[in-house]
Length: 165
Image (cartoon, rainbow, N blue to C red):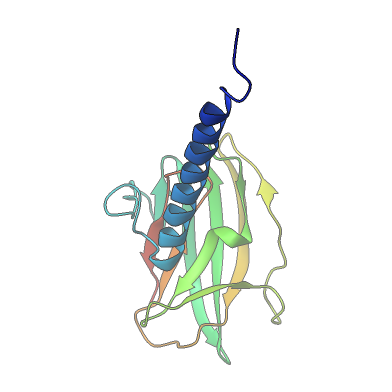
């Protein structure tokens, strides 16, 4: 025979453990947002495999090429092309961020003239997407400017940096 309330301590312990796990995941996510590149392979920056023509990145068979980087009145524009032979299934605007010389991050913008309006695009099995014109409004256009690419390839993968200027 069980005494009423005997299971309560176990329930509270399980709830406390679940709460600590949620807090731990939140701390890891906050640290990653505050310091991009702080987690993952090679101090957070995934090493790029061979690709050409440069500048380009190749992450586990998912490649990105950048060309025609120009400044148009404070809007940094670049042509971007993807080819996907990896486990990832898509490209999305939120996968690309521009990091300026002061390490400030700028998301891509689609409201400037000449910038491609695009959403998450599904493709894989060696298919290509682009070239498209991706744009950013960084706080500063001073060098160095780095493109941060974070394709959705799993929880701890990938965060790659490509210096573009």
